[in-house]
Amino acid sequence: MTSGHILLVEDDASLRETLVEVLENKGFSVKSAHCALEALERLASADFDVVLTDVRMPDGDGISLCERIASSFPSVLVIVMTGFGNVETAVAAMRVGAYDFLSKPVRGEVLAVALTQAVNHRRLRDEVKRLRDVDTAASNGELLVSESSVMLETVSLLKRVARTGTNVLITGESGTGKEVLAHTLHDASARRGPFVAINCAAMPEALLESELFGHVRGAFTDARDARLGLFRAAEGGTVLLDEIGDMPLGLQPKLLRFLQERTVRPVGGKSEVPVDVRIVAATNRDLDALVAAGSFREDLYFRLNVVHVPVPPLRARRADVLPLAQRFTLQAAERMSKRVSGITVEAAEKLVAYAWPGNVRELQNCIERAVAITAHDRIVVEDLSDRVLRAAANSIPPAVSSGSDLAPLDVVERRYVEHVLAMVDGNKSKAAKILGIERKTLYRKLDAWKLLTGSNDDE
Image (tube, rainbow, N blue to C red):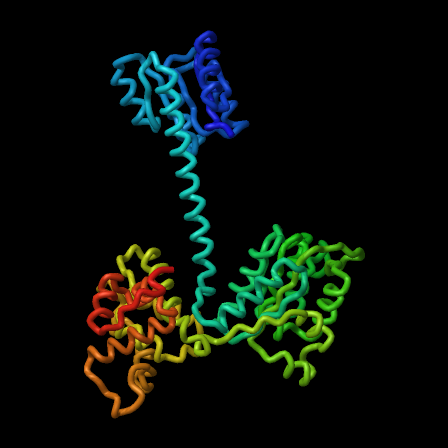
């Protein structure tokens, strides 16, 4: 394994050959160029970690080259070699984006160390960006954050069938995250085509047919150009048919035929086109009842319902409310550039007491509103919506089961902390994060309540 890919720019042929030999002996992969133009051509055709360039060149200078590289190839680092003591040149190089500069003559060991540091810096920067992108992508799927056993079982089932090509039916109330689960299924599969989602209830039958199957030019009045259709556009990937229970009855036989034959005939077309896509259907409706009522074809239902993945409502997974709320708090705070890091115990109690009829989507909207209006570093009760507060006021909080159980605030706090610890299986780091307090603060409280144990302290 080489220590990095280096492009050496040096007009002196003898020195260029010597430096190439020195660097290759140090384990670097080295290509060379005798002028700025050749260097830019090499950069356009291959990936380099670092450009090592002299200042003087027949068609320009190292400073101008450094500026061009910073503009056109920003991921590549540049080290400029200058004459001994030429401070002005070094400063000029750094101003236009050079990573480092070296004074000639440069010893082989010094050059190798400088290049190794630059290569490591470039690769570390790329890795940080990659992880940030991964985290961003994960954040888009954080509706799957879960501590509840029922949701963990749902996700487990989803991942077990991910690498198969079978059709999957995801059912659940609105706002439970069915599309996110479908996206997770696609990401966990071996499919490298796109993920395409369409709402079957959002358009009339004729338009929906054209969107799914495509059409040829002149197929109908407004068909001035041919349309590929979503099934063909998603070749090698996954198509989510959201709100499948609302698909027009007249279009259902055509979808059934596609599922059986895996071919598409565009509207107005005469030939069949084979398509390789995975179908995931989702609905908040009772398909069994629709079949019984004659508004949904039984044979289509069986074709779609090869693997059924039910998504539980949020009220059936109360243990997920606070982890989700904490995640949404951090996401919203980052988007709004606000320093909001958590939720107070009192606000968390209100969130847990609420039934969340709008499920995860409602919780996310509630937290986003709270982060937007809060004047504190944590969400407080006053930041929650009136709807949540009214419902919480009319319900019995987790720490109190009857009038005889009314207790001082410190006792209520202790009960709630115990409740959160129970929800996270005693994990104190996770409990502190949900409670929005430092872990040492949690330890101090547990010690005062004589509840401190040494188990499950960390993730």
